[in-house]
Image (cartoon, rainbow, N blue to C red; front, side, top):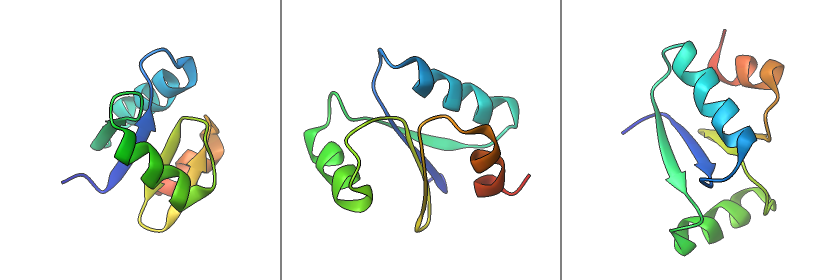
Length: 77
């Protein structure tokens, strides 16, 4: 199981940016489509208090939206 989770939806351009950023840096991640998985959507909201995507999770840390500097810090580059 990947250490990084990305909560996303198919039509979200910022979700694509996060996923592409992680791929470019060869970071494995688990993609969670909250549009198809209501339980995961509820889990995301409970963890973060956020209803918007993308949400990138590593352990107890989260990055909301596409923020390249915060993502770099999260993944340690």
